[in-house]
Length: 474
Image (cartoon, rainbow, N blue to C red; front, side, top):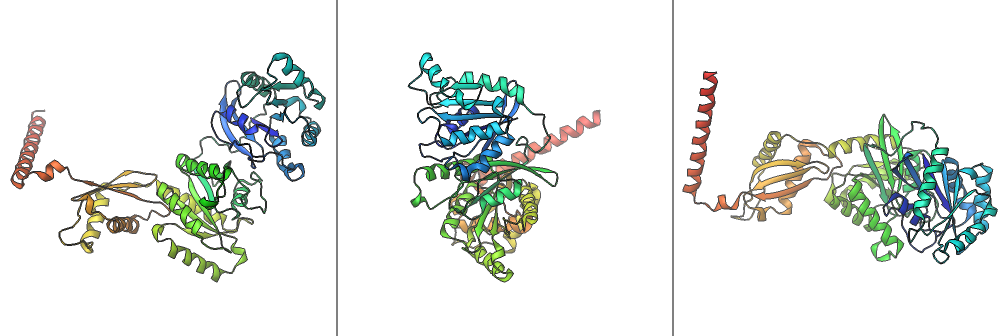
């Protein structure tokens, strides 16, 4: 079932949202209009099963926000309508209450009067709540979301009414068990929210021609070609020097989300602006985190194919640190290129989880090393003795070498290029680590090392002899 939170700006919806889901998901500040998108979180509640909590945008202007408020009211099974007692009922609250009544959902609505910290004595609380019955709601409760007062009573009421108004499951896509995560990143106003809405098929994230509209990441779920996807729209990231307050919080939340969820990153670039220094900085950070990246060159309907191809070549030239990143031209507003992008997402996700056989891996690396030995200063040679893949997502390799301190960046890049040449790894960053042979073994005199090797061979022969004798007796 879906439980929606609606209300004016800065009434405490995001604080309550975080209390209910038990984690710091929505950005909470004293700045009006902090939450400007529908933020959803799926959780389990005893007595209700799987529940989706949806936090609506704060109501800055009812006329512009009306489609979002209407959608969350229309789609929710249970509504939590929140009012700040310090402000009281304004024209905005009257508009929301009227629309809820028009949809005949007042019986399935809990009117929450927040910020009753000062009036917390029972007599004062009851008196304060009485003033709000004129809005036409039966279920009214006073709380303090910030100080967690009366939250247990609210949760009990949610379970009671939720069981009554829960709709049967429609079998549509949900956020549970999603196989692939997708995160949309890029500068403000490059079309991230538009692309999100194109994927999900409905206006989940508010789209305006205002730079930096989306301040929080938003989850949507959709099915494509028999596969489930979770998709995230992330905060528009500005230059670090120009970030203040809420932007800094959103920026850090974006990075934390990427590290935790580890999605395929769709990095959007506006073809009319090209690759900027901000783009380069962010791409380097994502690459450092070890996430797969696909660059979407958006708004290509505004230029011709020749210009688009030239733009792609220019971007590739600048991305010398990550030549593995594929670039695809798209038009987020019309859906052009989305089919090709989805195929690329599937491919990149598969590449991130690819595992290479150790024997095949060593054979390829040895061939590459012998055919074109890397150059080193005199008596500073670094040799690969053995290499193995130790992890996936991102593909991680451990190379055992004779001298770890001689494995410079060029040597590491050489191994990276060899792996991509033979095993592709499109869109996937590779993590290459180096480890020296056991130092004690290297420090032993050659005669002693030879004795150890002979002893090992002798013990192996004895073992084979015993095995053969045992098999004959049986």
